[in-house]
Image: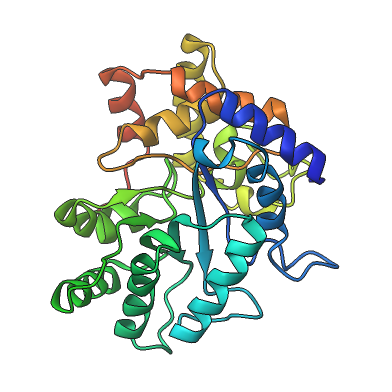
Length: 291
């Protein structure tokens, strides 16, 4: 996506009530000619416009950038300074450990994030892609050392990917009252409904990942979504996001849009109020196997 289109999407997103802009310092180092931080740089151009910074919650992540890998104190401090510069802001609202780093003592990571809160560089530390056990351990360290604890969690969670979060992470989230921002809300596009057989890969680089969700149960989930979307006059994507929004502790759902049209389909989720029957039907058809 070119910068002008990204800036237009951000304008539309916030004009329609969107409030959380999520990125990571490594986005998009994997593309030819990129080195990481390109996404933050584009968002920084938008944040620098008068009035924009105070309209949104800025969320970014550390630990994966080639110049600041891992979650040692030195890497975290280098990463936050680079992100602040690219984002053209003096503070980051939600600062995530992108992936757990088992090569660095967890107490060092927790202490480093807490330091950044005390220095005013971030408002809340947070954890992305942590197991329930490691999340509990990090919270225990913060409590015992009187440090600022992780306040939010990012985890892969959607209608066709439920068991990992619900069985492992949700009990910790419930106990400690953490905020949840699910990523992969649309299962790499599968929940938009456009990937229903192996012949339809679409034009998205995520097509192969979306097709990995092709199972009889997941197709049945799409069929239930179809009926609900038709009744409300919205997209399947909006139904998927609305279901997530109904889950305990979920404060927002992360999804990407490459065009204004895709964005409009996602934003319509904010106007959908699924009734108890809809929620029950979606939860039932997508329920993880207890085996």
